[in-house]
Image (cartoon, rainbow, N blue to C red; front, side, top):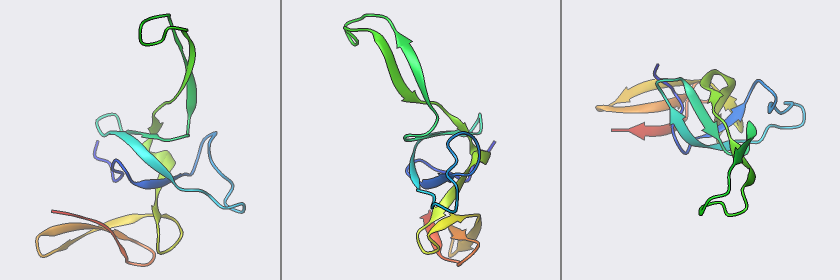
Length: 113
């Protein structure tokens, strides 16, 4: 499954427990990892879970560690800096280069060679 989200993108969670009400203003968050085969993304500070770890040299205390769990890619939308909000994107080919384009304002989000 191919995904429109890439590592380092700013996204907004649009559904699930970590959704922010749009009236209060949604905050964009950075994508840490992308799992395109599973269709999932890991977003910083979203979908936090506890992982219980034993005592080891890496974790001498053991205990519980909070970490981000993957979200489905359909639960996030790309953030457009021009529109200041979540947007759908389109692909535009210009002189042999693919560009991700905002559907609202038409601004280029990123260029890929």
